[in-house]
Image (cartoon, rainbow, N blue to C red):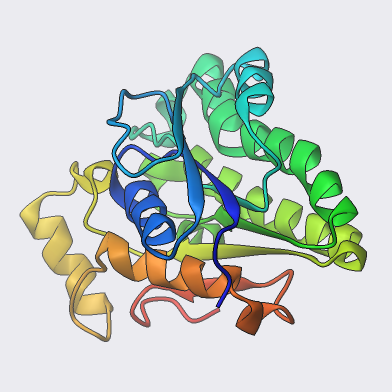
Length: 233
């Protein structure tokens, strides 16, 4: 079992990111939590409040980090509105948080991991990367599809240094990001999910935790779908 590694979870204040961070802490890792929201220090080795939509803020976060062995890119925004109503500003903001920031963190940390001959990168994608999502989440799902492409590229380029890079694509998860879904829409979703329920954040965290172990050392460049059988690419 891999323990006592230095980890950073980008987007760690709530939901899936919080569950991942707490799981890594419980497994003995030293975890830095990064989020735009305030968060309690708790079990974290360190916390950094930052707006990662700004490249300068990403660089500030990087300057605070120790030698990182494990990078989890979880931070994302979902602007819920019809495709035809998206502004260019909203498009750029979504790209900045969901795609540019993960790339900046991967680009900065993967080479250093390779120099130390061990590293794990997990990028949180989405079921919408496969389906295109609904019209109200077009830009979000486009970024999640692009993140899978970035994941494959880093997997290919840094495997020589013992670095794996994978994506996890959750389906519907009981988090604040999905709080806009009303009861009728949720019932429609549940009828399409073979296991008949939504996921809990801890179930996504379990998948991420596996990818970090040495048992997953031969798994790289792949996307693990955790959606209860809703979509089977």
